[in-house]
Image 1 (cartoon, rainbow, N blue to C red):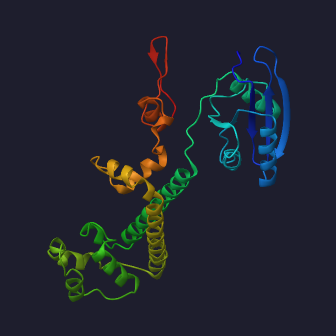
Image 2 (image 1 turned 135 degrees about the vertical axis):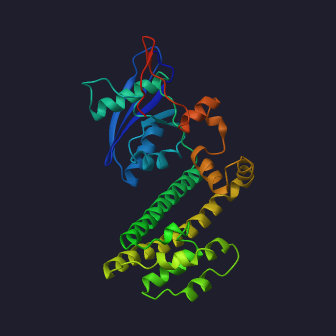
Image 3 (image 1 turned 120 degrees about the vertical axis):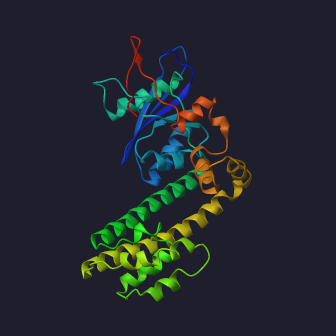
Length: 314
């Protein structure tokens, strides 16, 4: 492999340790090699930073191993060198040569020859926004699971209100649900009062059916399970409110970008915040539109051999 970088380092990252290999010397000669192992505590990572800078490295590469690369990156990104995150699949070593030292040396050799493509790593602010938008997605997923649990329990009790109210977690549905949890008798006068208001005309037409639908066979066990899920739903909804407020603060510096993305049909401001969290606002990271669509997972893989297209594992 032809060398193009005089001083570089390759890092093999693990949970407790990192192994670093520095290659330096004339491009036309065999490079001088230094290998060292550091712990992943903050103190040792700072020592790693100093050790690399003392050797005058201009570029440093490491593979994206789980979440273990993140604390290493957070320390090294302040260094006086370019740091590159490599896709582990793209820099896999040859079979039969798997040791931490050889992996670090292999990464350094690939980097010295300019054979490592950069993975997109946005700045810290965008990374923080990405963390919290992804967490919101998980919270919303768990919220939906709890709502489905209540649907299933109500079916088990032969309470059929979901057949007549499209969203039992809307205003009307929650009032009925609260009466069920509190073991209150649901009378027609209660349903008339609950369904009073704008936008509820369709519900008022079905009060007779709803009265029959809430007449199920419910046991204390059902009430307990519904209460557990309902309390969790309210907690998660409160969490979503706080999370979305925090996302609003994170996204404030990108107000203009959000407004532009929001003009796209089918995308609201929440979706715009997710798009910015995933791809950032600096498109110079992506040489072409194809690189961007590939990063976003919108570009299907292509596997063809002997004129036959094969299935690609995602």
